[in-house]
Length: 391
Ligand SMILES: Cc1ncc(COP(=O)(O)O)c(C=O)c1O
Image (tube, rainbow, N blue to C red; front, side, top):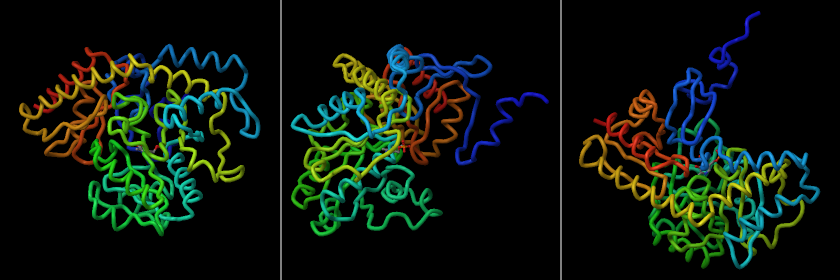
């Protein structure tokens, strides 16, 4: 019997992903390395997960230290130190006047938990989300996701979820009610929906509306949070503080991890038995996450993300007048979208042929979310390739 090749094994994996391109076997910094040794500049970063790049010393050291304890998983029935320390760190950054953290395993799971918490706190049921949103693929998070094509085959989803036009204050005033609405969920910078920063004034308007109608305001910072936009939370740039943040993607340095950060008001009615997840915040992943968040949260690290983001934003904006196929560059920090006048997928494929990985965000937007450790040189190389494929 011969050993099957990597390529022939692909058939056993459920075909819900349209996988393309080479088989990757290693990574270093901002590059992925394929079977044949070819290097790809990676501006996808595991879809905004690999904030510290590949083979990061911060991640490696944390993993080794975590392994040395012999504790990978200990049930949440017992106390372990790493999760408690991580909760203090994250809740403290989110809510200096008092908050708590619940750890889970993904972004969708974080949003589902946040919906439950909002119901317990408010005594109400309904959820309001916005056009262009993406909150995950489970039954409640998918109901709040504005992608009919993702939802259609799986309905009925959670009842009582409404999606209203982003930025429409009148719609918000009429749909977000004191009687029925438990939570409003919004991404301060929409990711999958086309990389759209939400104006600070709209976030502030939602904050006021939610306060006056006893509705929990949830900021889904799964993609835009944890330094991606050049500040610790993306919403910091608006000055608006929600009742809950949901986090995931970069949190575990590539290990699966999500978190709900909730203020003391929302946390108050929650008691043992109200929510749980077997793996959430185990000592291994929490040890790694604590080092990852400390690295990202470092003042100089975030200043560097902002500086590189400023350069990237200007370089992408400069493509607009030069390349008629590009309509607009949008983004913050190291989270950018290039809106095209045509389908984005062929451009993504052409960039991959030139060893640059970027991805789409909807049909006509190219999304650029490199590791936050990307160098200015690498950004220049990437933009030059995009310029070439858009010629
Ligand atoms: C803003 C946002 N929320 C939630 C999710 C879902 O996260 P996960 O795939 O970890 O369930 C994503 C994933 O892309 C996301 O971008």
